[in-house]
Length: 316
Image 1 (cartoon, rainbow, N blue to C red):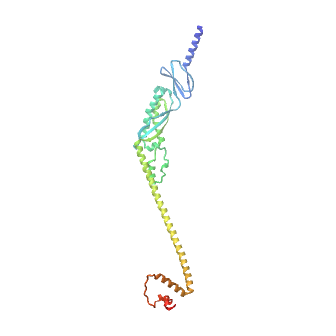
Image 2 (image 1 turned 90 degrees about the vertical axis):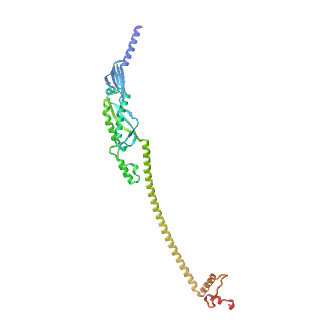
Image 3 (image 1 turned 45 degrees about the vertical axis):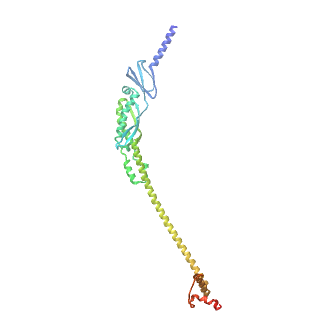
């Protein structure tokens, strides 16, 4: 019975020692084995590894890309414009021994990255104009296609870049990388996540944008008024031409009608001139005399010719 208990204890002890001496490295990890804080060896390839139990320790570090996300900060540009800049980076541990000996853990590594990348970002942002940190090329902006030639010319000059955002981020990486080599860290990439104006500058930018849009709107309004005046002028001209032609046509028709009427009257009255004279005289009598008219004429007057001829005193 004692022998069985001794064997069981021995097996359990051996299993505990074996468990304490083995460690597993997966595809995203790398291990630094230390003995009382001194680096003994490293294991980068995934798989099973062994160490002296209770004496050596396996320190795990990530092998894949890690994220660094900086705190947004207020930075002035070369043209004295204050902006909020939010940058981020990707990095990895290339030398786990250096990493363990210098920073030893991920929290301290993040602190070192803050101390190195943040000043590099600030240094390059302050060394260039705002447009250099925003744009990457001199591609023509769609917002300039507004029809204002002078404004376009000024804005194209203002928005012309010589460095660009991508080159600035490459220079930030180039400046920061030598300072990270001693920690066994490789800075893979640095990018600017977001750039925004501070509140005071944002308000002035909005006011300038509003003023520019008002200038564009006023130009369109003036062009519209000019085009409207042109259309109204053409309409009035066409209306006068049509009215004049219509009046001319109506007068021609009226003239022809009057001529035909005169011709008919002439033919009718020409058939009996005495009757024509008689009817016209009667018309004149009706127009000249009223019930209250008083007329004194000589009996030899031709105007009373028909009155004398048909007077009741003469029996005619």
